[in-house]
Structures are given as C-alpha cells and as structure tokens.
Length: 195
Image (cartoon, rainbow, N blue to C red; front, side, top):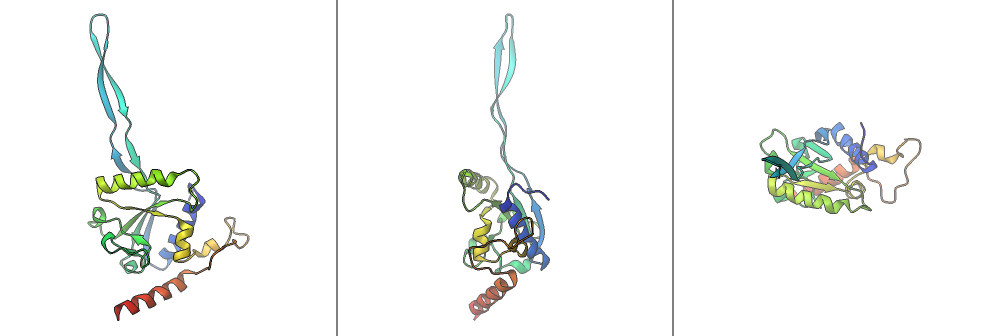
C-alpha cells in the first residue's frame, strides 16, 4: 500500500493494531469521493459574419474532496474509541462518528483527514474550509487527525516503535503507551463512570 505521507502510514499502523483485536472492521484508504460543487458553465455566442455560434465556457470547475481514510468500526469501540457528535468529548473518545449520513449503514464509520503536527504549507486551513462545506452540504463530519498528537493521547502503534525501514528503534519524545495499556486505563475510567 502506498501513502501520500509518513503521517498517513503511521495512522494506518494505528488502525491495523485496532483491527487485529476487533475494534476496527475495515480500513478504507481514500474513499469515498465527496462531491462539493458541480462544474458551472456559461453559454455565450461568438458573432460570425452571418450568424452567431453558440459557445460554452467553464466558469467554475467541479470541486471534489477525497478523505484520507474511512474507518468502519465494530460496535465494541463505542465509548472506548468512538462517539457520535452529540456525545463527543475528546478526553473520553478520540474518534467522532461521521453522523447521520452514515447512521443508515450497518456499521458506524469515521471519516478522517490526516495532517502533520507541523503544517508548513498551511494545508490545515484549506481542509477546514472543505470540512465545513462537507458538513453543511452532506451532513458528514470529517475529523482532522494529527497522528503524533493522537499517539500521545492514546497509544502508539506497535510498528511505530521502529523507524520506517524497521532496522532500529525510533526516537520518541513522549511517554510510550501501547494499546493494551491504553485499554486498561480506559476500562478503569469506564468502570468508575458507571458507579
């Protein structure tokens, strides 16, 4: 599988760890394409010697958006990893379900855009415009994820411990927590909240 950035690769590793133990059912990279606006043309006429010739000119090109990932969740991820927009609290669950547009499908889904922690080309700003547009037009929430920030709050993927070529340990500047440790912490929090 090829990725547009290292951050996308790291996030895929994260999802793979969740899929191995049943929290994620399917990982769909770059799917589906979301249409935001159609192509707009204007009709004009070119005056010839004896008649007018109809012409069409593109005023605006169509605009589409392709999310980096669609995650199909197993129901067991609820309250541990996922919640709907109305119940979302970033301290409790790291992922927001895409909302009503996907409630009719058989499994809950999150639609994800990946950006690096340091955004040198200001691409996050461009994404936030698309994000508002998608939510307004399609009632689909696309969540922005910065993988390293997510890893700090939750866990690091097992593969992330090693450098990209897999030959030596990666230098990580924050406390390492693996999935098993994170799940133990979450279960304690959930048990306390039920009392």
